[in-house]
Length: 263
Image (cartoon, rainbow, N blue to C red):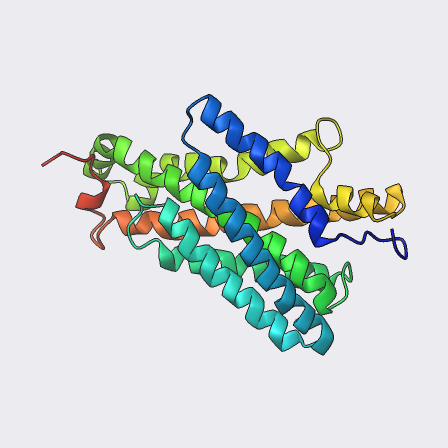
């Protein structure tokens, strides 16, 4: 410990690879075939986190809000492309994802800054912004993946509803509602069990760094509520925009929304 914080050496990081070796051994023992994925994940996490560490250090040293905005914009773009790869069943999903992640980041970060919860400095905006965008990305990806499945499974019902004179919004509403729930329920359930089943990462980090438990709890609560808002906004915006891509301007179901193998 130094100055109330934790001084972690590269040797200690290397020692923690023993736990990775256990994961690899379990995969081999049960023939799960995860060894290559685990190795790639460890290598990518080391390279990516090391690189972003240098970037964040440079941003903190310059104390430039412009660099913060650029970094968050890059996160939004990469997050949208990553989520699109998961939402393969949704046509032209990239646009809705870019808009959803941007709106959720701007709305939630703007609100906490306006309320004076966090100061407008890189030391707060970079980590909090990264958490917001990362969770919004996951929620949007899950929601759109579910939306694609729902639209294909429900295509006969949707076409029947359209034939009765319903608009595309009315016909898709049940599928959109279930997709929205899928995108948000994981964080909602996680928030319900916080403090009972697990301690979130921010709280654990602060406690390990020697912070007062009350301060750690209060900061964690702020971040949980912030993430709930971001996840809800991103899932809502992405599904609201993406479902339209399953229909023509004349409110007809496109071929992409039909079950695979149908003529």
